[in-house]
Length: 381
Image (cartoon, rainbow, N blue to C red; front, side, top):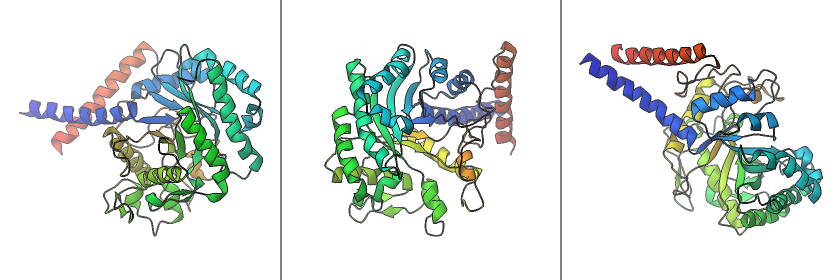
């Protein structure tokens, strides 16, 4: 009987880990930022992501070291073209040259599926940069068309949730009026190019700014009564889904119903400054862990129940050189040495970054030993 209970507990533990690994390999991608001086080499990162079964990665540039390190892998890449390039990309010839240099050479071995042109440009203060954004997107897309690559690589940009003037109730979601002149033609571009609308959404910021009025359970996907939309009578039990549907409503208000919304960044910091309420490893584990479980279930938002949520979690590593408050340097799921920052069911199945044959044997032994310890705990407590 004890042996039977042992194997039942072992299967239960493996099933839990498998659920999270399945989520990571389906609807969830990871943001791989590199604003740090202590990160592992791209080849080691490739090994780490293979061990986690992560198959979608978003970069903020087109780092050739990363793209080469993932040659012949099963990873789909989103690569970035930074804001500093936008003015140059208004020249069609420079856009063509950029694609030929940073995209075309890698496609035979590394799967690049998307280029984000600029990041959170419309919520910045640079009016000239805003005017460069759409022409840059169009020129990069035209370059892909000219090279016969537009069927496998699409073009978009990533926006802050701050482009919304109203986000609740979701059915009344609307873009800021001062951004309409940029967003209307951009939405027309998305519709023609069949590319998604990307949003960086962080419920953490809303909670940090107003913890007395916003329920922690509501932002962490924890059980709560939810908030009803009085127009549609749909109930929202978490803020992220409400934000997604608010973006869909804002897009619809501008005449489009066929543009998918994807979350290009979301996450929760494990540490912050004293005034950054809620930035703890416990809350980060709840936010990302609960999000992964929901993604694994292929659920949609209340307004789009048949459209699975598409999310890129921010971020793979803590980045020690990021400016700003302490939270900015503490969004990572992992420390640079490859150990988890907190427990969402993956540590113990994460191989150490050791490529020697003896190291690989140690990985197997370590994982098995941790399994045995976990099972023993289940059996004798």
